[in-house]
Image (cartoon, rainbow, N blue to C red; front, side, top):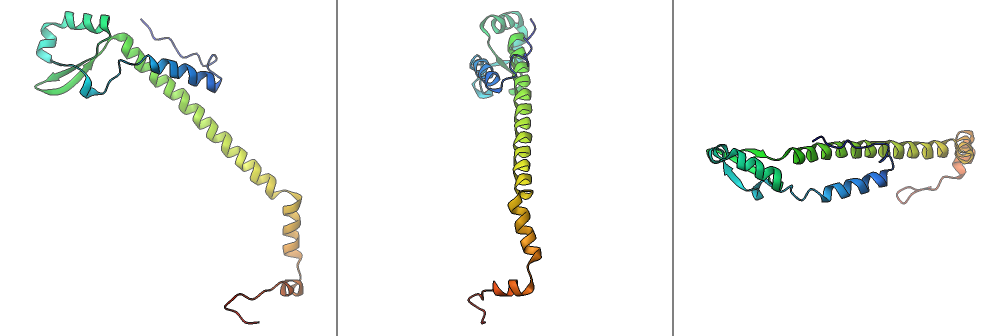
Length: 149
């Protein structure tokens, strides 16, 4: 059994991909926190390995193995492992889309700032500032509350 690869062309639309990911995540009801998994001692697991593996395969069970009363491993089916690999692939695609969106947002902000800086109004304001004579500048002076005229 091999995982179905994520079809990036089919899911190139961000909303379509997110919908696909949501549907997939709903199928992951078997994923539980470690403390909720049934515990099997490694000796018991080893003695009944065939029955344990059949239970894992047939019932999609996940077993937490302990060695000397310490958590040692989690045993799951190939299908469940492939689901985890698929989660990783979905995560990578979503991160790339987020990074691409961040870059797009930054470019948009830069373009808006550049347009503002290079606008006619901005150029006129800069020219007025540097072309103002000392007399015109003195005429616009207004003393603050702590200054006298």
